[in-house]
Amino acid sequence: PLTVLVAGGGLAGLVAAAACHAKGMKVAIFEQASSYAPYGGPIQIQSNALRAIQRISPECFEELVAAGTVTADRVSGLKIGYRKGNKLAGLYDAGDWLVRFDTVGPALEAGLPATVVVDRPVIQQILVKHGLPEGTVRIKSRVQTFEDLGDGRGVCATLEDGTKAYADVLIGADGIWSQVRKTMHGLDDGAGGFAASGAAGGAIDDAEARKLARDTIKVAAKADRRYSGFTCYAALAPHRASNIEDVSYQILLGEKKYFVSTDGGGERQQWFALIREPAGGVDPEPTPEDPTPKLTRLRKEFACSGDGDPDGNVWDDFALELINASSEDDIKRRDLYDGAPLLATVDPQRLLSPWAKGPVAICGDASHPMMPNLGQGGCQATEDGYRLGEELGAVSHTRDIPGALGKYSRVRVIRTAIVQGFAQLGSDLLVDFDLMMTIPLLGPFFLTMTQLSMPWVLRFLYTAEF
Image (cartoon, rainbow, N blue to C red; front, side, top):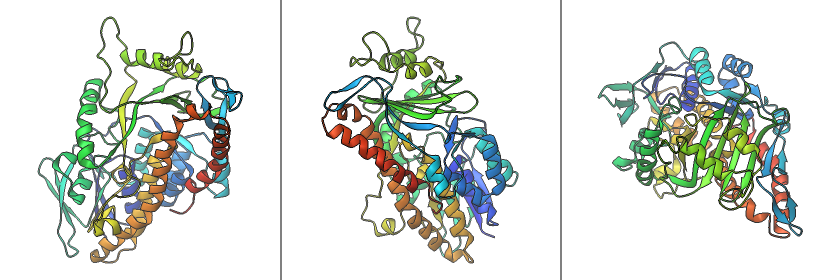
């Protein structure tokens, strides 16, 4: 059987490893975290990702569905964050629905299971326990570089401590600042990754986050990654939301910012506050006068009384309901980076096979980092893992590995580029809704087109074939 090394033990790496194991390959995961601990909050496993996991391992699928909270049984959509509009363009009060969409209908049409939300640690535990042999994950092991041995002889991966590991295939699932991607594409030394993987993403403290915010600007330039224009505050609030019976996911829209909330299961709400500002910004350190600087800023940005936010807008009180239910320590801040939807290069090899070269391939955020507003980052990574298993499972000789990985790359790149583009465009348009609400004819037209297009977007996302 083929031997496969996977760099990175987050969702992308675990699914890719499980898919390869299901096809009879021998798999090892190298995870840089010092402990494979339960970091990270809940994520949506949408219908397309559930189908991929079901095909890889029916047992993992059953465990995930049993552990998850169904979110497709309630309304999702876009709301205006504060009173906006005029008589010609339409007048909306704070919290009025602008667009609602149905996520269960398109899933049922495609014969897919309904979307569930599951904690990252639970997903991790299920995949490790039910999808992989014991001892597959090796912690404190970070792939630093690799060498293609050529002629079907496989690859030699060098770990950070100098240890060498040999295999037929290397899969880089090591995140947006991927070391494997850096080596594969011959990027500059500063392009390599220090960012925590999906397995350790919640482990950094505020002091580390401040340093990363500044350092990441330099790394992004070397790694050919795009700053989205948004910084993101996020937390998992231990709070039963006032609208939990009716709403599973909503976005409150505003000028230069928006507020996303979703049912986190177990009477918790996961929320994200995205604010448009230059990269590298950091919050003040706590002082006796202001021991909670992140909460102080967010309470001003989403003020629901008095003079409102710095622009004079009085927000719907739901944003502060969740912000005030969160502690300062639980709120994490990071700048959001993604990648170009399609590879910008004239290199023929990279055009023919953007995510693979020889016996090496990348997947997940290493290949297509995207904005979070569609909730498809992890879902597309799951599809990647399934496709890698399918293509490598058809290999009968190691000489065929480059062709199989090249096919994986070509099959996946167009679909993920479209999803990436939707996420980028959607994020940019969300903060322009504020302007749209004041333009006669254009505002109502844009809202109508958004409402009409969402079923088609969801049908594209919730396909059974990927």
